Length: 179
Image 1 (cartoon, rainbow, N blue to C red):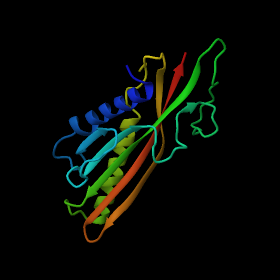
Image 2 (spheres, rainbow, N blue to C red):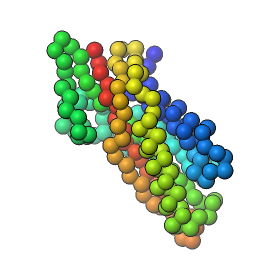
Image 3 (cartoon, helix red, strand yellow):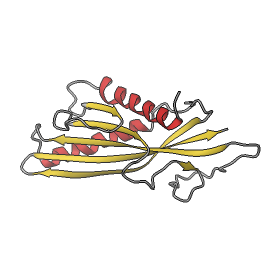
Image 4 (cartoon, helix red, strand yellow):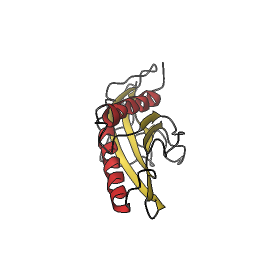
């Protein structure tokens, strides 16, 4: 009994937990420490490779859900009518995934930390695209169709000699239909 955006974000988080933790060998240095639905509020030193999945975007209020023809929607190459004769609307439900790669306790050299962080972001991004969101339906009759990743960022922090950290964000949107 939830709204479509919540159901989508929860499905993405569950999928990422499987793909980044459950299905990854414990010896893999890029096995996620934690995948969390909602804001990450744990210690990034203890959970040095973390993923946080959020519906909406509290950091940027211009990144909001909207009917597919709103000017602020990302142009992902689709030309879809916003409304259908007889009723129904097409929407993009949006959210983001925050990632952190805090290689403080690991003592990695800058180049290796950078390689690991970028590889981890690629792993997260590619798995967001395969999240099983198609067919999710909320109690209001809105149904999800397909997911798109449309923006990514990753920034370095920390410093020499071996306490590097990376933080990033991957933005997604899901095409839905309201009847």
